[in-house]
Image 1 (cartoon, rainbow, N blue to C red):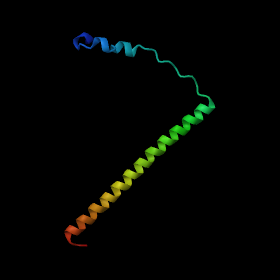
Image 2: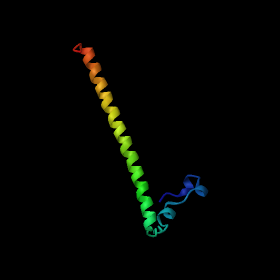
Image 3: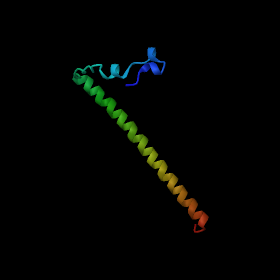
Image 4: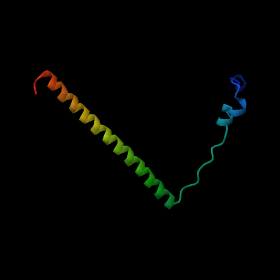
Length: 78
């Protein structure tokens, strides 16, 4: 194991063993109201991601169409 003393930041860092050996406290189960709110939050995030993905898809589609038209203009077939 590499000693933290080699890096000179011993006072300001935690050793890996301190991070790994910390017990993870289990979360208590959510109440129905908390679960409902958490579900709503998850739905909002999922909807935002879907909206972002759809906008990007439409943007790429417009760019592809623009490039196709530019290629046709250059070839003189339009």
